[in-house]
Length: 320
Length: 307
Ligand SMILES: Nc1ncnc2c1ncn2[C@@H]1O[C@H](COP(=O)(O)OP(=O)(O)OP(=O)(O)O)[C@@H](O)[C@H]1O
Ligand SMILES: [Mg+2]
Image 1 (tube, each protein chain N blue to C red):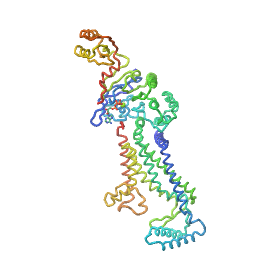
Image 2 (tube, rainbow over the protein chains, first blue to last red):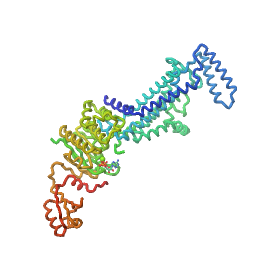
Image 3 (spheres, chains in turn green, orange):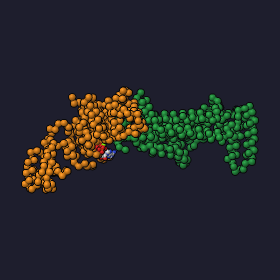
């Protein structure tokens, strides 16, 4: 067992000792900090300050927006829609007597949940290389002539990839929060925020929103990472693994849309990676349930793992 | 005394339809240095890959201290240290980090042991440098250090002299001999250059086209072919002499450095000279020498053909 931790440690050391890994983190941090600087410079995030008169302020804003809508050209429905949304949100605050909170670290973190796809991207790059690079460097020969089964080596590599994802995710959350705190301040320990849900509005705790905002994305992250890992183990080629995994990650929704009318559409991996569809209530393809999607995901997952295992453990390690 | 460390039992390897290794059987004993010689493409690396379980054995088996590499991989490989083809390590890590990486994979390797092997291969100075900056010779040494970390009973080195300068080869020769005699390690060294490893080997196995064509002890020379000696003559005209040797003595001779060179028995020299002189071929000089392993090697593998 001790031995197994050593194997995982080896893989993490080989990952984090390389400069290219640190460049990834620097880029991620630069995106987060850069975005905050832009928001702070151009966005009027302080429009509702926490004072006694927040009701008057909201009502005044609603009146101003209504007036702007009346003056706006009918064709410019985009602006009208945005303004209407703000009015509805303000009304929710007024009706339920919930004071709007200031913008801050928590909300900045939630808004940046899209950056989870960057974490996916970086993890895919690591997963794609973790087996294939050993073949490219030729070090695979020295790795496999130790008294350790190939299965164990493969598992240690896979766990190292998942740990990389976890560390990178934590890095993203922390850098988001700290950056948000430095630029916009902190809203509180775990304040409620008002979000649009099912056509209406709802107050939810900010931490639960962070968890769901990032948590649902993890399904896609794990599936695409495992896919890249599998390609890496089967074809021993990291470029191929990165290419196919990233292509599928971005083309996934398009693929589902293209085949949406076909009976097999609901068995496509990407029709099932977004589990949020069941929480939101707008299911993509009729007849799909949470249980169905989880089953499909597990089947794909097991196929990926089985392929990686069979090829890594069974195939000869001869000259490339 | 001669306990087998590694046994090959009718080992075959077929890739696709091509039989690359056609049934190798030999034994390497503890404390013995075995040279594995063959021209390019003979199947040395393929055999070594099978010995260490990197590729499957199509037929037959390899046993290390009695453990089959096929069915008892962990126990068998625990006793093996190897370099397969080039010693490729992680270029972005230092020599030390590379050794620590491999040390973590086998329980019981101490810091002191790591220092010991570093000293043994003489890498104390560059050990804190990135392997990417190592010369081929330094990498070769690090490869040997890596193979020795866990004090294996069998050491397999695929072309370890590749990239080493003469001083480096001499050094390797010395510590391989020491490993064999002092620590009773069985060493298998492959090479396509006989001269480079002849001096450090006890026995030589010659492989050609996936077949073992000869096994020869380096020190004793009591086998049948040893009566043959190498004869060189300075004659004129050479062409006529070659013709005469062929027609009258059934000897195929060739010219090297303007000298007629061939192998024959010592007893036949007077008759050969006589027939040459009789046919008006001038003989200026005759030298006879023992057939070296090198000559035998070329006899056995013939032209350096790659099939
Ligand atoms: N994966 C493979 N597929 C088909 N043929 C192969 C494969 N690997 C090796 N061979 C063939 O097997 C033969 C033996 O190759 P091997 O690498 O074992 O030779 P070698 O004795 O190590 O030669 P060298 O001195 O050049 O290192 C060669 O003819 C090669 O073409
Ligand atoms: Mg070779």
